[in-house]
Image 1 (spheres, rainbow, N blue to C red):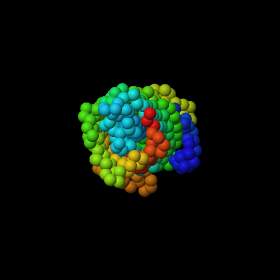
Image 2 (image 1 turned 60 degrees about the vertical axis):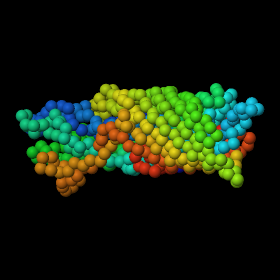
Image 3 (image 1 turned 135 degrees about the vertical axis):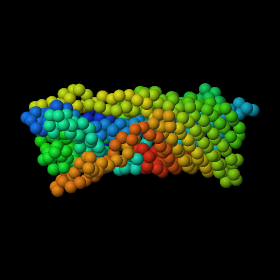
Image 4 (image 1 turned 180 degrees about the vertical axis):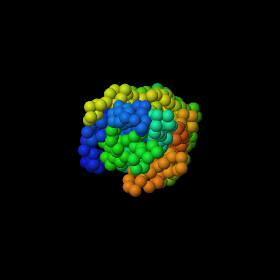
Amino acid sequence: MSRIQTLLWGSLMAGAAFAQTAPSVSNVMLYSTLYGNSGTAPNVFTVTQFRANLSDSSIGTAVGSANNFRVTAPSTVLSSAVSANIATALSIIPLTSPASGVIFKKDSTTGAELPVNSTLGPIFTERAETIGKGRFFIGFTHQTFHFTQLNGESLNGMSLLDPGGANSSISVTANSAVLKTKPVTYNVGMDIRLSQDIAFLTYGFSNRFDMSVGLPVVHASMASRTFNGQIFVGDGLGGAGDNCWCANTFTPGTQTSTLPQIGAASQAKTGFGDLLLRMKGTVLEKSNIVAAIGTDLRFPTGDEANYLGVGAMAVKPFLALSLYSRPMKNGIVISPHANIGWQFIGKSSLGGQLVGTTNPVTLADGSTVNAGGPFRSTKDYLPDVFSWAVGTEIAVGRHNTVVADILGNQIGWVHGIPGLREDSVADSPSFTVRSPYAPFSPATATGFVSSGRTSFGQYSGSFGYKARIAGNLVATFNLLVRLDNNGLTARVVPMYGLGYSF
């Protein structure tokens, strides 16, 4: 871990006396929500499950044992949205074109293998040309993503909302209507990073067909802190029952309607990601235009629980088009290019919801609660991605190429992606919402709730440079800049790499 990364993690952990090491990276956020500074006790509770009423002694049994409470649900909503967005990001991380660099074609007259006099190829769009019969290309690239926003909201402290209104098992008297839970809000701050090193090998089976294999090594790290918990229960004195704290509390057996520090957790893993197989064949090849069709297959070889892979098979058919101008007097060649493809992914645990297991967790008072980690997940489809790219290469001689692209991804047209929306619950005649702080005045609880499955577009600008530094060895440098705030956002992503044709 770098010095900067260590400092950032330290800032997230500030104020938490005990930071849990979650069993996997995908469990980090939920662990920070449920496990407090003691390292053993879940902290965010709501709705008692023990039948009781305020008018007899059974109320003491109901609210005095943590085992009669369950953990509040908003954290699973955020966890599902984050996991689905990370899986989508992993599946659409732009990969450098394996057939870029110096390519060869056989001269129809002499039969000699000659380098094509054009450009050094695109960076994040697939080149329509193949590398040539019997030729190899090997390449290596490195990218680092630091995700800082989700749908335009900073990940430093997103406010989550449980709107309340659920029936508890407590009533004012034995025969009256049951009490409803009150709104709960708390903040979650996260630091999410992914880095990917990928090695490519491409072989030309003919002058019109080549195949590439890519194997990434992924490093995924996440730190999370949960804080500023508030339960909007009014004065906590009961009254007509509407303000009783007993339907919600952060600490069973005690009126705890505010909790400044709830918990913290972190984890980081490194390992092989999902294996990529790319097949491509040209369907049109002339001196100034080349068109190709191909298919990407991603095999779920990475550990999805640690965000090293997506946990399901992915298929992406695509079309590639490359155009070339005639060489100008000063050696400049302009080569516009375009790609279009549609990726479909199967069901994965990263597309479902994380829920607590039935494993009992022992609390400080010796009681247990069956709503803790480790967590299990349901499976659901990850979103489909319709992708497109347009741009151009500008070659200055045979040794330098400048590349600029606009990349677009339309996410979730068929299978949507779990999303969030901001919502509020205000004090009203039918539902009391009072500040947990004196003087217990009418208040509004605001935070993010589930928006169900949705779709959106993501757009990036790509600006790069390729240099032929020795023989057929080509160095690549690029900046990927996000142009929107949809989904999980890493604003600027640097990339560098080397490729060699032989």
